[in-house]
Length: 100
Image (cartoon, rainbow, N blue to C red; front, side, top):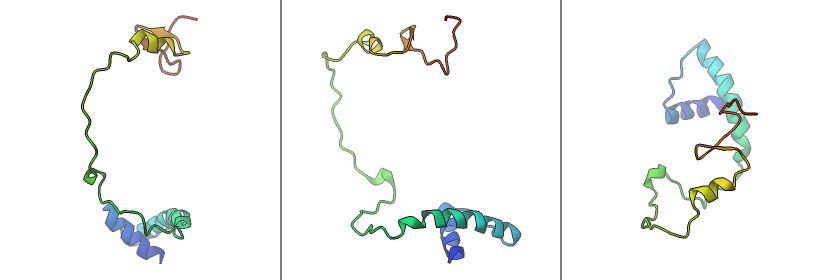
């Protein structure tokens, strides 16, 4: 059963499944992953519309409109609890400064 699922998964994902010892290794790894997701098998998805690509969905278009009632850059930056430098929010984890 697992071998059938692995072959189907390989076909769908365009995986090159080797024969022999490497196949056995892949069978163990993919088998564990497939078994992990088998908890989803009992879920009834018959009422779910299948899509083949997210690009096939039509998204509604909207007109670009300028709104004068939006907050200014300064007002938005003032809402941040982080330090501000050069009109940017400073994140300590990625921006190092000499200030303390």
